[in-house]
Image 1: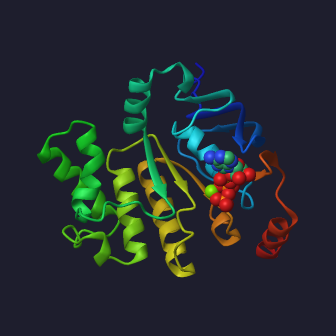
Image 2 (image 1 turned 90 degrees about the horizontal axis):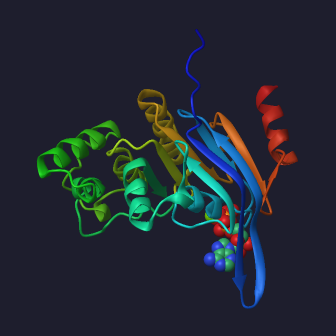
Amino acid sequence: MNPPLQLPLLVVREVTTRYRMGGVDVDALKGISLTVQAGEFMALAGTSGSGKTTLLNLIGAIDTPSSGDILIDGIPLRLLRPDELARFRCKKLGFIFQTFNLIPTLSTLENVEYPLLLLGMSKRQRRKMASEALEQVGLGKKLLNKPSELSGGQRQRVAIARAMAKKPRLILADEPTANLDRKTAIEILDLMQKLNKELQTTFVFSTHDHMILQRAERTFFLADGEHSEAPLTFATSEMKRCA
Ligand SMILES: Nc1ncnc2c1ncn2[C@@H]1O[C@H](COP(=O)(O)OP(=O)(O)OP(=O)(O)O)[C@@H](O)[C@H]1O
Ligand SMILES: [Mg+2]
């Protein structure tokens, strides 16, 4: 008997985004199609202004495309009502940002608990899941510290724990290492990859750092809002790595 067909986790189908700025149209995405299977660890790459954040915001249902479709677990996001979409986003997706976006007045533990509170979990359950997630990212001893008492790398670990705690299907990370030094950036990528392998959580992250890109299983390149082949600079560094 054939195994059951597995639905892709994410399908981006012929998506365009047009912004209007000062009476001028900007086509930020020009017909992007992309399929991501559950469990992938993939990068979106491209120079500044190529459309990485725009695409991540569409996948994360933070924004809606001008045309085309985004499906997660086979569900077209455009068919969901605003309240359904908010619940869907809260339950199925986790977000990691370049600037960490932690709430400064809350402790590490409270920051990670916050999305669980929005999901309506009891205090006891929240505490348990948040402390487990912080343990997983190596911050089990920093539960009561405020973000200002942590290093950049530790803050990003808190953000990863916050995204992971609710066990989402997909984690979207927009330049998660851009504000970190090289060594810390690699540690953060290694941590994301470890969580991807251990928990089979799918990651899609953006970067324009070649060093970071080399750790991705697959890279989707964007250039001026369109899918493109690997640029020559990347191909050259890849060849050096293989030599
Ligand atoms: N809210 C907006 N209004 C108008 N134009 C926008 C808006 N957001 C993005 N753009 C334009 O869309 C294009 C893609 O921007 P986007 O932020 O997605 O690029 P990016 O690849 O994430 O760049 P970076 O690496 O600098 O973060 C750019 O030309 C940008 O100026
Ligand atoms: Mg961006």
